[in-house]
Image (cartoon, rainbow, N blue to C red; front, side):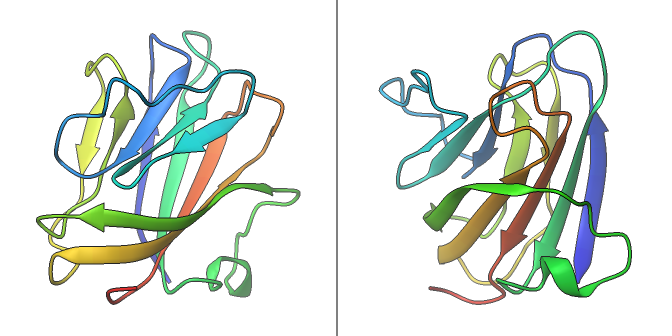
Length: 135
């Protein structure tokens, strides 16, 4: 079930999502479309020319079972994230655009899947599927 959607304008070509804590400085993309650590995921997106459409869904694996699912999409991250306060932050890595969810439940680990429309980089659409409970 979709629980949030936001269009973000980003100045930097990297979108971050994860815990409300600081993004670790050691987290780097390299040549990959996405990279993750225990608390955050960063995704290469198209900066400065278009809004980035981000949709958030609950229940891992549920994204394709609803009206309006984008096709084609590619999974660039599938793993666990620690959300220490039960909230998820989505925004550009320089902190100019930011969206914070309301409480998603109890703090703890959540299974997260990130899907993009252009896996080679330059994505303009990002879907995030997060489990309803702790992983």
